[in-house]
Image (cartoon, rainbow over all chains, first blue to last red):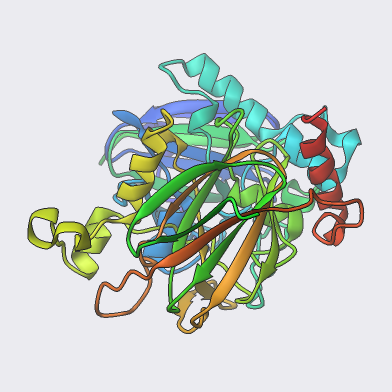
Length: 213
Length: 234
């Protein structure tokens, strides 16, 4: 699957590089396009989405999966809120498969998965909490749930297994999302060093927003 | 000594704080039941069942005997200690009023009295509200007795006949846990008629997980998860 890459950078209203392990929070207006650009390849980008007018109506992984009849996200996938209506649509994708079941890493889940030595390693849910605190407006831990992991490959097997494998995103790969209503976006550029989700070497990603056509 | 033995009618909701070292057995009396379930740590309901952490800690995409139910704080809230079905879904959510209306049609209390049709979403939210919880606490649920298979391409398929009459699953609590249930049908259930099934609920005291417990020893991740649960009891 190949992206068109057609949008010109000069027309963007926001261009922002997010260093490895950092967060990014931004509100999209209805119809705006967000491109997440995997500058160096194989970088997991954890994302949460909220209806900008009602944060309790947030991205719901399980409603999204059920309504599209498939566990992976790609071009054409509609990211649904708890009200089962779309927050965003994936309108372009060079990767072909993004995960929404693997969740975001946390200090606590790192200890479970890798052992006590991982307790004080940087983790996505700490980034999400920092971003939520900085954004304010009542956003807090309660609002952090199953997220999208762009560029992350978590295949399920028909016998009920699940594994984390090497990413399938190359340098310069990207995904584009169109906001279907005003949507708050929280990003954690994953700092995970214990599994291949970011190739054991987290790298920066670029966020680009274009105004609605 | 039985702590509770009752029947949850089809399409109804229920909640209760279940103590550590007790077990809840769900019995699908008639077959083809579905029980949407959420779990919260009773002492701190901000800590709750976490589908992604449960799946990735144990490298599974379905729940059955030997699987631990993790909170989002790295602790095991509960364990599945026995199961006659072999597959319980946790990746496809639950019915909303809109889904119910579109798939099966609404039926109001005014028209049907207590046979009215209530979605799992509405039932779960009512139960959550009894503890001051709400939509923000609504996370991915378990669907006991339901199987949704995933093929190599990631496509979903609801598997009928996963739960014959008399099927049962037992959940042992490793920490005091608020349990919230709805017995509304699974949203992907292809049945033409709205047929919510009753489920027998049985709560009994059990021994806490011993050192050689099979769920604890199922993988090194679970050993650490159980240790984290036991650490907060000190």
